[in-house]
Length: 276
Image (tube, rainbow, N blue to C red; front, side, top):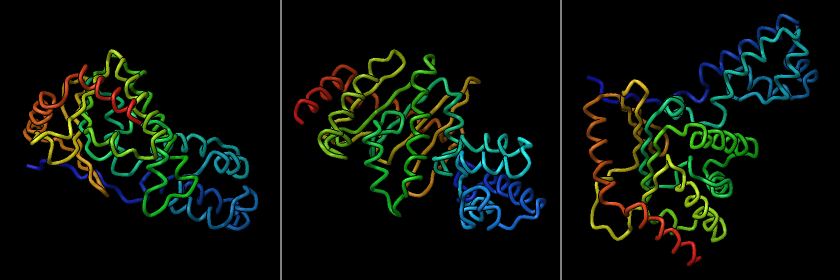
């Protein structure tokens, strides 16, 4: 039985390639070369080629200009609507992001960085600017826009129960500097006041705990099916086998008992904020 599903995808996703193929077909129908079409839409022939080959996400200006040049059929605008959900998301994360939109329970243990749902813009940008290979300005903006959109889940789904277990050292590291970390802690405390959000801190001085194998996310769908997601440096695994998910659920439950209580976690965060 297959226990995990590797959700990594090629950098050029099927939907990007399909959109690009539509652009190319319409361009060729109008007997325009890439260079000629590029002049009409205000983009270089290299950008046109990247879009047509599915290597680049088209921005709004490109779609609007291409629509005008290629007949105002509305086809490109509608097709681009299906791409927005993927813009700024790692290819291997997209399936999990789709499940997040439906979840009635979402549990997250993180030991590498503050989870995206809890990040401030300053903290997120500090992470983006440190990535290798380096991101360009457009990629950074796309990634922050996608992250900010995901964060709406905390307020738009008040009946979803969100639980987070965060390692203490994630705040102690001071990613982005003291001011960024102070804002991050304040933001985390505010989110912890929401009725549907619970945040616990796993103390650094902990001889052992059930999450040492790495980060994990768990979610329950409205049909009461459970899935798990584990992410590494260059890919992610969507875990669908009930037996494997059950093991990860038991580990998460153990971690909740090993982490600080909700009140003790809030007290620790306040002390760390005061120390900055």
